[in-house]
Amino acid sequence: MAANLQSLLQLLIVSQCGFLLLFLVTRQGTRPAIRLSLIGLIGNLGLHMAINLVAAQSNLALVDIRHFCSFLYGPFFYLYARALIIADEPLRLRTFSFVGWLIIPSLYHLFPGFPIQVLAVSIFAVMALYLALTVRLLTRFRSYLKAHRSDDTPFLLDWLRRLIYLFCGIFVLDVSQFLLSRIWGWHQSEWLGTLLFGTLLAFVNLLVFKGLSFPQIFTGISAGEWQVNLQPEGENISQDNQWEQRINDHMRTLQPFLKPDLTLAELAEQLGLSARNLSHILNARFQQNFSDFINSWRVELAKRYFSDPEHQGQNISEIMYAVGFNSKSVFNATFKRKTGLTPSAYRQKFPVRISEKSS
Image (tube, rainbow, N blue to C red; front, side):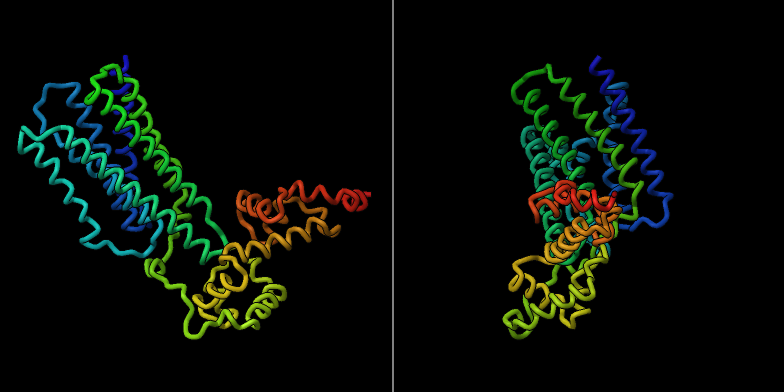
C-alpha cells in the first residue's frame, strides 16, 4: 500500500512539474535568471520522479541518471533564491560551475567498486552546502533591507523562509531514509519515503500556487548594491552635531517617513548627503539602522494618533497606513518592540477620550 501511495505522489509531482515547466516556457515578463533556475530545479525534480516511476513499473533498461539529479537540487535551489533577491545580476559561465560536482556520480557509474556510501555522503554534503549558502544569502538580504529600506518587504522574506524550511525538511527526510535503510539495515522505512514524496509535492505546489501567483513582489535589488561600502566618505561627518539636529528637523517638518517604500538613497538625497554618510550618521548619532530609525518616527506618530480625539474614528489599520507602514505584521511587531504594548492595547489606554468622542 505504501508503494502504491508513493507511486501516486510521484505521478502527481511529475504532472505538477510538467504544468509548471509549460507555464515558465510560455510566460512573458519573467526575468531570465528566475526562469532558467526554476526550469532547472523543476525539470530536474520531474525527470527524477519520472525515472523512479518507470524503473519501478517496467523492466525497461534505463540509463539511471537519478544520482546526477540528486546533485543538482542544491545548486538550482540556491540559484533560484539568488535570482529572486538580486534583480539585475547577469548569468555568467561561473554561475554554472556547480556542474563540476557531477564528476562524483560519473565516477560511481564508471567504476563498479565505487562505494555507495561515498556517493550518498557527497550528495548530502552538496545539498547542505548550497542550503547554507541560501541561508547566508537570505541573512545578507535582510541586513540590506534594514540598512537601506524602510519597508521590510515581509512577503518576499517569508516566501524565501518558507522555501528554505521545506527544503530543510526534504533534506532531513532524505538523510534519515538513507541512514535507516542503507546504513542501519531497517527496511520498514516506507513511511519516510511517503512523507518525503509528500513534502516534495508540497514544495512544487507552493511554487505553482503561491510563488508564480505574485510575480510583482520579486522586485529584487541591484547587484551592485551588494558590494556597497557603508563607511563614511571623507571626514568623519558623524561628529558634527548639526547633522543630528538637521535630520530631526527634516523628519519633523517634511515627514518623509510617511512614504511606505522610502529608501536610504532617497532620504540622503533630500538631506544633501551621500547614502554612506547618512547611514554612518544614523548608526553613530542615533544608534539605529535606517529601517529602525524610520519606523521609530512612524511609531511616534501612530502613538499621537491613538491618543488624539480627532483620530479616534480611524481604526488601527487606517492609522497604520497613514503613518507609513504597509504591513500589519511589521507594524504590530515594531510597535510592540518600541512601546511594550500592541497597538490595540496602547489605544485602550485612552478610554475617556474615546467615550467623550462617542458622546
